[in-house]
Amino acid sequence: MKNYFRVILGAKSKFAKECYDNGFIGADYGINQDLTNELTDNWRDFNEKFRDIWLQSHPDKTKVAAGLACGMLWTISKGYQIGDIVLCPDGNGNYYVGEVTSSYSYHPSQNLQHRRQVKWYSILIERAAMSQSLKNSTGSTGTSANITQYADEIESLIGNINKPVIISTDSTIEDTTSFVLEKHLEDFLVQNWKSTELGKKYDIYEEDGELIGQQFPSDTGPLDILAISKDKKELLVVELKKGRVSDNVVGQIQRYMGFVKEELAEPGQKVKGVIIGLEDDIRIKRALSVTQNIEFYKYKISFKLIK
Image 1 (cartoon, rainbow, N blue to C red):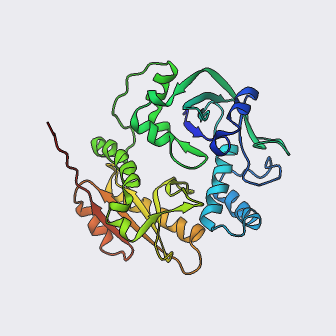
Image 2: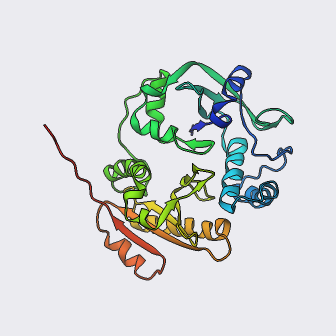
């Protein structure tokens, strides 16, 4: 299956033109060694080794920052498959579009030394032509973002016209309407976090002023939102139900919380969880009644027509 990714090529896309002219994408993250024999099939194994290496050269950073850096490096170097499509901002409001055509290669002492070859298309996608949802996803922080959910729109923008339809072949999704709605809710929560009930106690995780807590990567999939209490004593995993079967949601957030506890939490930090859904869910409430550290929140939507 072909996947789609937004990739930022250097701070503020400063290496985008070089990558386009020379047919590659890449990353750096200060790991100055050939990773050819280090790119394990399991993202977590790579992180366990290189997180400490990264922290040695960044002693003032947190385990969260280290995990993100190593995760992004592995994703670009190994996680992308040949045939996947990449969208790369050019710094001028447009996106280069290309297809990954090679496995990993190392180019020491060059910009973005951990590289993949790319066959660039002749078309540029204008950001102004994107839907608001795709704009939000391509504008997310972090070097890499998976935007496969917008495959139909991206193919249409490229020129392969497909009429988007709202369907789901995922057996864990029981309500496709809620699934689509709650994908938008995630962006709304991030943009309006400070005015929510959760925003009173927690901040979405930031590193050096950059918001990195949305779609934070883990070894079992991306966390919807990773937040930290204002006193830095708790990490919070926020998972939107997205129309999924209740048991799947509870199991997923527990896996995410286990990852955060084992891989990201500093000594003494607690890990809590929140599930957010459109309607009261007795199955989730029954499951959470025997847990001490996961809560359920229901959201409401309202709008006005003003003449």
